[in-house]
Image (cartoon, rainbow, N blue to C red; front, top):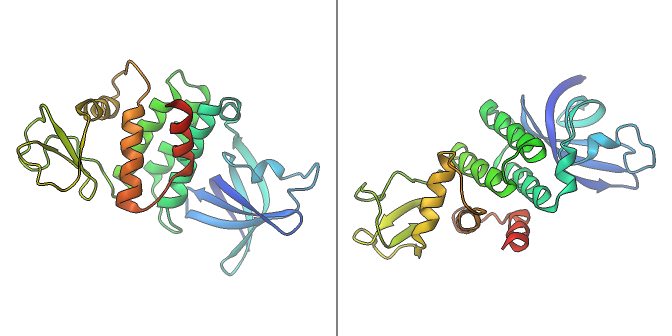
Length: 237
């Protein structure tokens, strides 16, 4: 049986001498795995379809729960991402996040579109790559059930002024009066930066504080370690 799905390649693992097993995030079926044959050979016709960031219409031959890519029509390669190291690791963080937090048969059209929009902005937009990534991650956390709460103190609801605390268990921020010892103190500028990013406001510098907090949150709340994000922070810090 053949099926056609629109998706973006998240990663590929070598299989045998010339094949790969791809992880593809699709609009119709969420994450799917598929073998693609012969793509490690020189001049392979479908080599482009085995590369991360490849956004294409894929044709699969399916037998049971196993898929093999037999054709692909390229929609976008996002090639400029590969030409800049900061853009590359920002884009790789997007793909790694999707790989960790999306599942097969879980379809989220809005989330899928946000991924494509983020990669387009990284490739062709004017925004700083780290800002684009931070904005995507804030959105993505909300759409995968791990939203950060910027509305005010998660206990009293008032705007936080002065010392600021973050509890990774709840994803909430607390004022000094409400802090109960669970979590850690953060720089108040971090919360202000996160709010600006969510509102689409410009920053004077790269959102290093926000990305470091998101990294801390992911590791401690979800136990997921995004190696691409850590490498990006190492490069820009």
